[in-house]
Amino acid sequence: MKVTDLAIAGVKLIVPQRFADARGYFVETWNKKVLAAEAGLDLDFVQDNASLSRVAGTVRGLHYQTPPMAQAKLVRCVRGALVDIVVDIRGRSPTYGRHVSAELTAEGGEQLFVPVGFAHGFCTLEPDTEIAYKVTDFYSRKHDAGIVWDDPELGIEWPLRGREPSLSDKDRQLPRLADAGAPF
Image 1 (cartoon, helix red, strand yellow):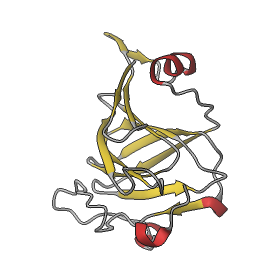
Image 2: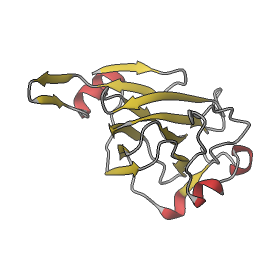
Image 3: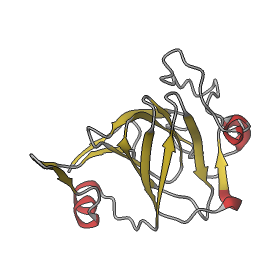
């Protein structure tokens, strides 16, 4: 696996090796032993999630869970393409409020590791884009939180390509980072 550290410490782009032939390909998307040794990711994932976004320009996020149910995530695109965005919401971090992004495609097989203490969201680039992700703690409605996707203080340039975003009512009503507090 090729592991690249992104501009904010702890966020990693992981590209697993594909073994292809005339039939298609095989890929190992997670190997605890290898990623612990090569990337310092000694994690226990406890839940796998998936979401399908029918419309290009669907924006989901920016989501996180508060302690003690905080989650690290390993996100990959299994159909279509998206831009994945993570925002550092660790209150004492030198990169608090900054974000990084990565394009994830089904074709390329890229994965994004999102550590605890980050809000996560994405924008689909193609119709019928599907993502799958692993998390290190179980979903808890009580600890479910987020930041509004278009908070001007974050300065995120969402790749909407002239489209209006497709958003859930929940995501439209999330607070700005300044109003969300610093749970980490």
